[in-house]
Length: 101
Image 1 (tube, helix red, strand yellow):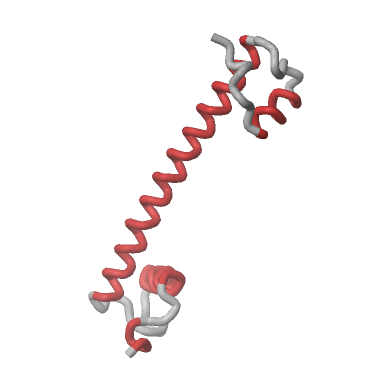
Image 2 (cartoon, one colour):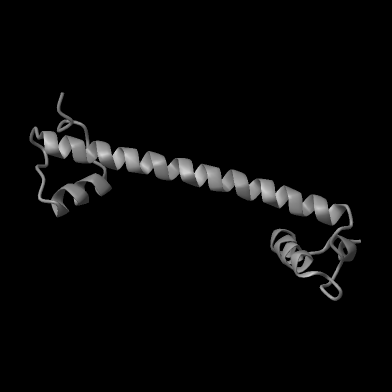
């Protein structure tokens, strides 16, 4: 079954046009192109979801380290790993816990 009657997205339309493929008429090559676009976008969405999950996991770990006192207010005397974690914590929470009280 041809996809030529299924409405095109703007991305599909511009891609079909750029590659000189048929638009609005039955074409197996155009159908394969549209399936490829759909597959690529689904893979991209899955990758974004995985990166967001990893970001949330790291964010939670940084907050726990700060709450446990592993990170101190300021960077003097910190190891480079602590400085990196502290900078990440400040990105997440601009007001350090010690200064919030």
